[in-house]
Amino acid sequence: MRGIVVGVLRGGPSREHEVSLKTGHAIVSNLSPEQFTVRDIYIDRAGVWHERGRPSAPERILPAVDVVLIGLHGEYGEDGEVQKVLERYGTPYAGSNPYGSFLAMHKKLAKERVKEAGLRVARDYLIESADDAEEAAREITRNFLQPVVVKPLRWGSSVGVSIVGGYQPVHEAIRALFEAGAEGVLVEERITGREATAGVLEKFRGEDIYMLPPIEIVPPEGDFFSYDAKYSGATREICPTRFSKQVNEELMRAAKTAHEALGLRDYSRSDFIVSPRGVYYLETNPLPAMTSESLIPKSLETIGLPFPDFFSHLVELALNRK
Image (cartoon, rainbow, N blue to C red; front, side, top):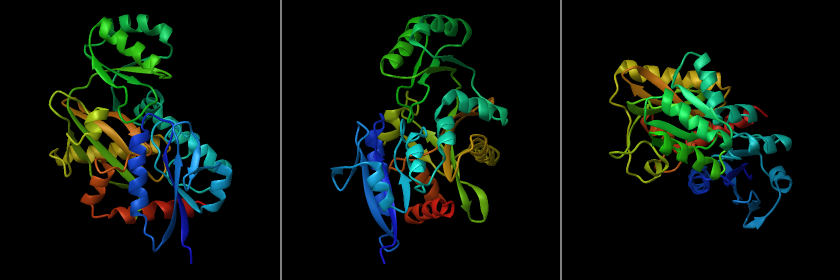
């Protein structure tokens, strides 16, 4: 018996290509060979699909798999685009549908949704064109306490995020993101406090949405949870956290609220700042990374859920929707 054929997508045309390769490797390595036949599907930086080292088209690859686990991050992987391809060919997959994925990766729309659902969010200013950068920088330095957080509207893993203050640095940070290809830039009031993250997993241990234990994030001195801090191994990630029971419960409820408000599916991870003013929502990852430095694996370890069982659960969730 061949077992269930699981296609694992990794790589992709986003700025998180290298992280995706590591996530894909973690998925492939932890799928039980007794249960599954694994197809390692690589997507290169140009968006070309490969199987067994050879370029191929999705319409040739996907009919040969029973289900897909997506190890992609950022553009094409988390924003709903690859999900559209999978749905076009009727291939079951774990994770959120195209619309939920798009919504979660659009930082402004996501914040509006979770704010309507009752979560605290930082004040922000959206810049949709490089032509507006100069006026935006003036408005931001006039109306926001400095420094501020400047981030690309739809990239993940803190790629391109900076904390700057004053007209010239803010203007330069906005311009630099547009020059690097950002479709929009979101500038936010900086909320000071301790960083945290919390995930959820659907249909687990008798819960429709099971709340995973939060993780306290302690970046290196003088840094925030930047791209480098995420993957350099220099950040301390503490689970169980040192927060009070009340704060931990609020973080878990907020992660569940965000998951539901954004219409996400199967699993997700949301990031927060725990400040003296309360818990503030930052963003949600509809396909969180699964590398050795990643956060979801630490939550799973805390609740005693082995990685192979987690991926088996995702396969089951996807196939049950078929």
